[in-house]
Amino acid sequence: LGTGGWRQMGMAAAAGLVGGAVFFVFFVVGGMGAGDVKLMAAVSVIAGFGHLEEMFLAIALTGGLFAVVLAIARGRLKATLVNVGSLIHHHAVSGALPHPDLNLANPQSLRLPYAVPIAAGCWIVTMMQIVPR
Image (tube, rainbow, N blue to C red; front, side, top):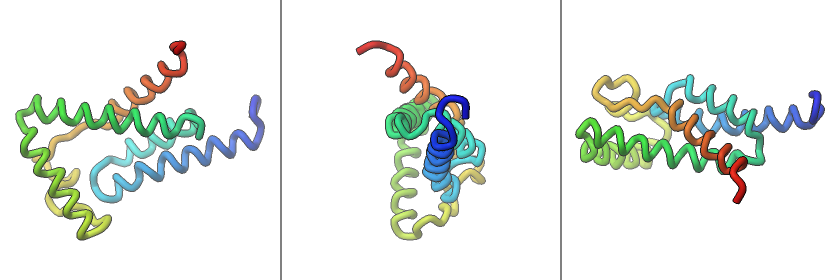
């Protein structure tokens, strides 16, 4: 309230709702934990609408890169790619229902703590703002 008033506070809250809602979809389909959704909502409040698209892109790219590195490091790249295809097919046919085998409840699935790509994506966007072009 000190610098932007009620309007700015409302815009920050709306950015948090959008950021949280986008990641809530992944939570509903069983691909992400609730803590990651809450973190993304909080980060979106801080970033505001001005940097939300850049942040989503940076987080998606770092998340994909981290996932590939994790799959290679664990020797499961082929299985992971097959699972991605299975997830795409499942959601194309079944909508938002969680996949019966490929979800957070399956102890065999690889786990990527998504807070790491969220932090990395935020850092990238911050550095893009600080470093002169």
